[in-house]
Image (cartoon, one colour):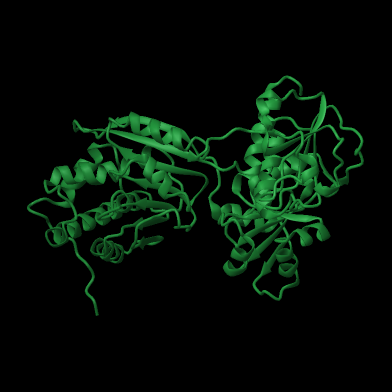
Length: 488
């Protein structure tokens, strides 16, 4: 049977000596608490030479710089529980805080294994309850929920706030025990995490009866960690797990990678965090489902309540994420594309005629058209679908803001329409006067314009080193020139 630990005198000093220093600092502990703190001190002394636990050896300095300093934050701010002590080393401030405030649940995080084992020895010897050891470094992937974090480690505040992103709850406190010269550190952290943390306390203090000045800095978390967002999302949205290629829903989703499937279902997949966020904000009624890899990356809190949450296996998610964004996809209902009826005339301004077969070119030219104020975009028969995943991605999401119409084949366009056609052999576009109402027609990739539309075409001059411009790029330049002409 293991013998119970009994603390002993350390180099002529006694528990009473320690008690006098503790009380002199304005900290009043019960006899049982003083006995625990003395036991901890004895263990620290015993194992220090072997494990290099602290460089402070003087008895008075150990009591004041280690134990008193560890307990003082608990007198200056109400510490939340459970409280994670990051980089605790031999147990500071966590163990003295646990002794002084026994109702606190403490988690001691220490990546160095010999120190982690020492902490377990201390917990057992002192018979401490509701205190545990995490024997690894804390990273953003550490998602054990805590209400508070405290640290006296030398790492910058900015790095620690990034480190605890996965575990600290909303409204949780991040408590930093720093030296007096940390204003720049506070400013840098506050600027970087202005949307996630608010500075709550920034107090100078001095360890009583010493010249040692300290700073207590406390940030309050104002956003929610990923696990908390997922928990809320799970209670808000209908969840559907999809793990098999034979799943009917997955089969339908996979069809949306083709123009035919998009046209038939009148739905599309949107990729890219920024585009997804903006479309969800501006078109909430069109948002049907949030697609994520597994249960991580939950829908944001502002997502519509009617949004379903499809949780796909990694393999299935990658099949749908053809753009390789590695971020959740959004399933949307697409607007119906009306039929272009105005063959004989154009509305005032520029009407863009799109014959591009490459969906990325379609998306890119729609983005330019929306940016430069084109009111109508006519998709010719040759055009790829504007809601093809690659087209939506290239459009930056602007396809949902565009007025789209379905037109005829480029071969069926009569040559007497007020059209400005783009062709490499045309006259310099700088000589072109844009009409009040006209259609801008770039050629099909590779083949260019049909013969009957080349007679009055215009060109964007390029150097001899380049044979031609990308079709969508050429159209974008032409739209820019029109927008600057004052004829919008």
